[in-house]
Amino acid sequence: MVEFDPPVRFARSPIARLATITPDGTPHLVPVVFAVGGDSHGERAVVYTAVDAKLKTTRRLRRLTNIENNPQVSLLVDHYADDWTRLWWVRADGVAAIHSDGEVMDTGFRLLHAKYPQYQSVPLNGPVIAVTVHRWSSWHATLAAPAPKP
Image (cartoon, rainbow, N blue to C red; front, side, top):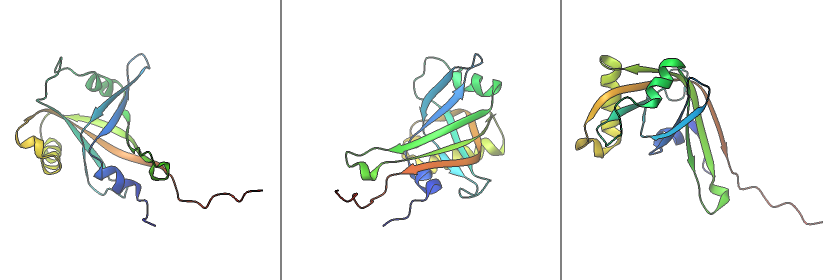
């Protein structure tokens, strides 16, 4: 049986859902592309996502306002299969910071370019959100033997 390593499964996923909280306390959830830097197994893991040049209704995204008001966020990746023995999810809880210049922004851009070939033609031209992970949570289905019949 393959060992389930939550931070590795998280890092290999192509997409995550970023959960923030609006100023009035309402959850706000959006899909994001991301890359993991730092020590992905330790307390220094950092998840990077950025505002890119894909078409958006505004450059002032709600997730940015939410993070400015409350930097506590969660990122969730999951895998669904019709074979429910293959289901899993991993959540990274942490503190987000918005970077519009500097070394953190450069690191985020570099990691995102390395993970997503699409960024060769879609510019990364907005701020980077860097989430310092404080806790990993996960669940995965296991191939357990069926319960004996009475």
